[in-house]
Image 1 (tube, rainbow, N blue to C red):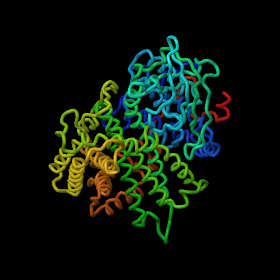
Image 2 (cartoon, rainbow, N blue to C red; image 1 turned 90 degrees about the horizontal axis):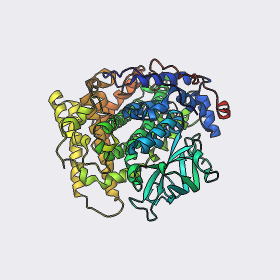
Image 3 (tube, helix red, strand yellow; image 1 turned 45 degrees about the vertical axis):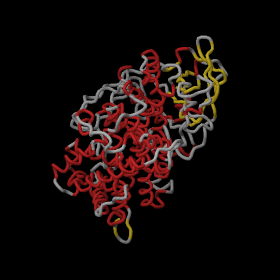
Image 4 (cartoon, rainbow, N blue to C red; image 1 turned 135 degrees about the horizontal axis):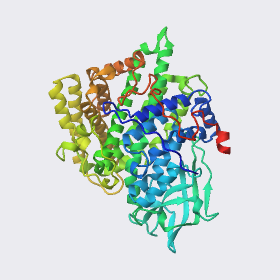
Length: 610
């Protein structure tokens, strides 16, 4: 496979807007590809799901557009410079089809250990492969091991100057469709924290018969994805296949997961976009009892709750993506909160939308709505990726005493999210050397007292200020309850897990308030007038913290009304390139690469035969 030609560089980013021009370009391309006969044609993607076949046309279109360049850091020849931009790109794809986003986006996960190890030799070698369109898998899980990385039984033993690999990796996304896989292997018989090493495997360089594919597994959702595995029988690897230090694999994987967990929630954001687009259409079309569904108070309330969940998910995800650049030392906490919280939040949103859609959310052949059942099935796997909700919440519970609200002084200067969430803030390139296994603090929740004081100084005792004060009081109660928690050995108690979940909600509220304070334009417009979006998300947070405001139903009703009466207002806080259906929009798709297929990419049977 030869390396593709250069992708046209995107225009310099407009710091007055959230949307990178490249994101708008991709959205326009996706809109074109979604027409009948295109690689993202919903009918074609539904047929792939029915056959449980890989969406090869859609992935080929993304290759042609140049998405693989965003899997490679700029210092190694790619275009990956900002995690928030990459999250936005994957979100747009997920809004069209989650299976495609999962299938193609896996290469970011597969390569992240190599980038995090920060060794130029392996990084440049892998970069050339990824830029040439080679997918990369990430082999962490093994049969019976679940999320316990220390239980890994795949062994790597020294053989001359190289290594021999024996065991299985399963289930793994893209395990058999590609040639490259980063695997975590046991290099010390006793295992332990220093008993595992990461290897970059190229199946083309292994002796015949020593690496065998394991069959694709039937799945409830993402049915077209290649969820399969590999079996190794003394597969020989050269010395240069080692990624990072020998024995440093577990630490490398845990640090890499801090990045992938943030990227993973882009799948949930895209699912939320898709669901809100369907809901907006349904509310405008459906009539009950002689009037439009949108005129019914209950429908407006549910729609408003769905919108509030989307805004809250965006606030957390965007804060986390920028935290990776500004406070990477704190990412062990930020990423765990984000991954535990956002997919669960959007799963709840999908349930709300499904309840309103009724039969249209269950039947697969209903014109315009048949995709919802697939969307809901596909999203069910997102909470499991890169550590399940329970795994991330348990990790957070273990460090709660260190994070207890009020334990440390509030952050100031560059560490404050009110500074680094500003639109004119230019983050430094991602520096994986600053990642830590244990975060020294949480600047987001730590900033809450100052954010509330700033809001009160500007607005006085407004409705928004009252909600912010209630959030601060809830966080103070959380701090007291964490302080009263008795330490215990072993897995976290139910009480500790509940405290961790409360911490997630407090963090989410603080992230939303920080975003509101950092970006004046979010205090105006359709969603920002009178602090509406912020009041909606704070009402949602306070309900979860058993402090529901008296006017919550009214606020949700206002949000739901806007969703239906202002169809041109995208249901997003992060830029204006999403169209009125909550999915499409944007301007100016880039030209296809030299020699690459145009948007009308060949159908799957032709791609497979090529």
